[in-house]
Length: 211
Image 1 (spheres, one colour):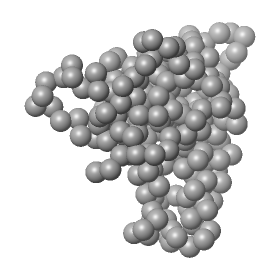
Image 2 (cartoon, one colour; image 1 turned 120 degrees about the horizontal axis):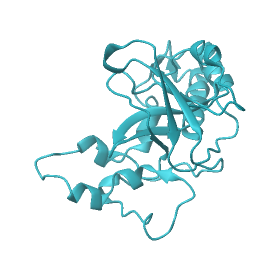
Image 3 (cartoon, rainbow, N blue to C red; image 1 turned 90 degrees about the vertical axis):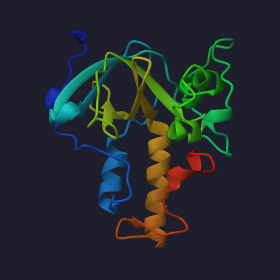
Image 4 (cartoon, helix red, strand yellow; image 1 turned 135 degrees about the vertical axis):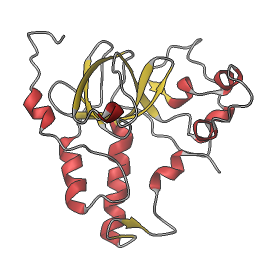
């Protein structure tokens, strides 16, 4: 339950559209996404986080969890061509300021799984993608790509996957960066009618390693 001193505006959250980052966003929708996103991406451990999704086809389910680890506003966005398959996490030796995808999927973690399980998608992800580790948010099929809110109804992330009993969300900083690039590409004509051109579309691909 949320603290009575910080009441949640349930109606405000329910009125928010299901924001997903995909190739069909129009210029108007991009602006709406920007307006809904939290300016300061800081999240403290234990903070209440909310999600409206469709787990197991239960449409419009209102889910509540808590941040299991802090996140800061000044995250470093991933660059280069690193991939989780070759990433060595140092989180056990040096407490990080925020979680990254490489803390979830890394060379040591893949060794724990049977060799017949490929994890081709997870291995191809960029290990420095900033993420939010959430406990108690029982998501499932139908929730991925949906927004994560704070108690003010501001978007702080996007549900991406589940791992080791936690839900992992992409941090808002990366979402804002992606939407800004899409908006710039739409204005320059590189993306027409919401469909990416062959050479400059799919900007999130740069946060994955080479195929």
